[in-house]
Image (cartoon, rainbow, N blue to C red; front, side, top):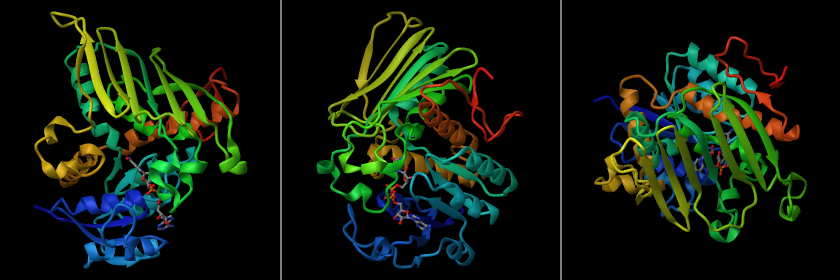
Length: 380
Ligand SMILES: NC(=O)c1ccc[n+]([C@@H]2O[C@H](COP(=O)([O-])OP(=O)(O)OC[C@H]3O[C@@H](n4cnc5c(N)ncnc54)[C@H](O)[C@@H]3O)[C@@H](O)[C@H]2O)c1
């Protein structure tokens, strides 16, 4: 079985966790790592009992990304830099025909969407997008429910990703290596919500209108204060509506992710309140149209009996990495660059719509014939 020489760039909290995760997969050999903050490699950090350098004694550490690409003889690069700086790292690897596993959101602008789309077409390497919510139990249930015809055509869906920003919960750990969590417009982090829903959407999102609340208590962020909440509504050409709420500031102690899908034949939801996630569903296609309720924890059913899978977001990260490796062996992406762009750039258009007081904008994709990097109102 082929083994892959892996390098990881970005050793913040997420990069270290994903780096450690590779050790559970015999096909993924972490041989190099890169960060501009060397202490993240050489010193023990949050959620670790030893420095990464001790956990991976044979791996080489670099402070310069291009040097790592040029010298470490990599098959795969895992891009774990801040959420607004992925594209350049991905493209530099693709240009060298090195496979890429890239975190989401995939790109930070329409120009970057065009660049990564072209780089992926031109490369002989595969780029796969690390969208772990696409591997949660709910996503599997949603897809199966849809494929069995129990949902029918989904005509209205909603999601919210509410991440409490209480420093008492996390200390300063989430901010100590970068400030993207403080600076990124909340709606730009739409990937975790849209990704699962897009697996059953029959058309691409084409229109968006978004509003932001403004910042009501900006004292801890000064002039960089973002909206406390942003709410976007998207629509496809055939009328399907997707509603999405994302927070900047939030004091609510509730679960992070909620999803609902209304279809012509049925309904399915994942509601996560107070750490008690449930999945509920009903369908007119069943003999008795009752509301079923099951546990909504993240662990995908296929991994329930695998103790290794407990590592990382209750099973999603393990399932994602397993799928990535299996697909790489077949030289194909687990989640394609097209899917990655489709779950990312609606948030870029939504941020612009919020800046224009909710103006409805037309969403285009780099594979459209009329693609352009300009924002256009829907009525033009
Ligand atoms: N899917 C999930 O569950 C999940 C959870 C958390 C984070 N994430 C994603 O993971 C990514 C990383 O998140 P994080 O919280 O660890 O971010 P972070 O900002 O804390 O860490 C990013 C790291 O990248 C390094 N870096 C920045 N520029 C660099 C450069 N030029 N060369 C080398 N290293 C550089 C920084 O020094 C830092 O250590 C983000 O994209 C985020 O969206 C995903």
